[in-house]
Amino acid sequence: MKVGFIGLGTMGLPMTRHLVEAGYETYVVSRSRGPIEKALAFGAVEASSPKALMETVDIVMTCLPLPSTIHDVYDGPNGLIAGASAGKIVIDHSTVDRATNEWASSRLKEKGASFLDAPISGGPMGAEAGNLTIMCGGEEDAYERALPVLKAFGDYIVRVGETGSGTTVKLLNNMLIGVHQSALAECYVMAEKAGVDPAVAYEVIKRSAGFSKSMDWAINAILDRQFEARFSINLLHKDIGLALKLADDIGMPLDVVKLGAEKVAKAKEKYGDQDVSAIIRPLEEATETIVKRHKKESH
Image 1: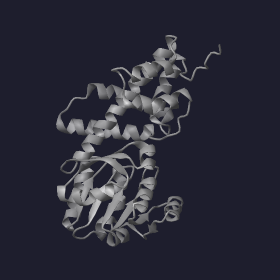
Image 2 (image 1 turned 120 degrees about the horizontal axis):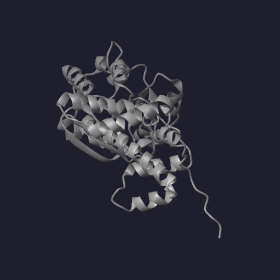
Image 3 (image 1 turned 60 degrees about the horizontal axis):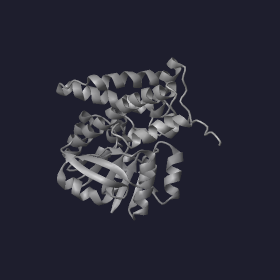
Image 4 (image 1 turned 60 degrees about the vertical axis):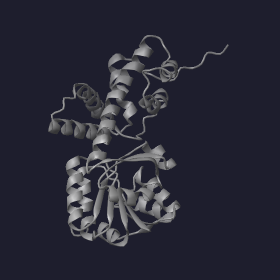
């Protein structure tokens, strides 16, 4: 089987590598030469355009940052849709909105092709390890045909329901990240101000009912002051905005999520390019308290 991948970023490039390692003849397209050269080095093949890639392969995967980027890649005379034909499948791993999913699905269906919205969770570490969580929306037949390919880089793969349902679950997940990281900021700063080592507080809470996986994500980045983006505040801000828009569309109040969104927006003003663990930084500045690793006392 021939497959294609568009979006060779921190997630897409290792996902593409896993496809090659799984034995799939893998074609790639990118606007930047750097990612293309890396993909070619581990055995991928370059296509000249999204349209050419779509015409060549059986299944195409995309992993792109914004709804507008989806339209850029899918639409137009050299876009994926122009190269689509009966029996082909397009899988989008991006975190976008349901309207974008429905638009892509409808346009591809006109060509006899199928579409799955299949957002991913697990971060760059999960992409490198090939153990991503993948939440899929779309027709069951397309999902079953795509499942062996998805297993190249995913180890928990679920068809949630029809088109847009994978995106819905991803937005639920990411709005919780905003809430959790905002609450964790207050937790760690409060521990520091109260004279408790935040690392010790983390170890206790990890074994208690208040634990969330967001604590594992953030703790070392905060304590070691290493805020290079694995998942940036800018992207989280975009995703929470999409979640709030969906909530408005279906008449769902999200009072707590809106508080988290305010904290994310505040952090974005100065630290948008940094990791979501940097949501703590405005609170540290406001309280004149820096959360960092404590030196162990020698005895």
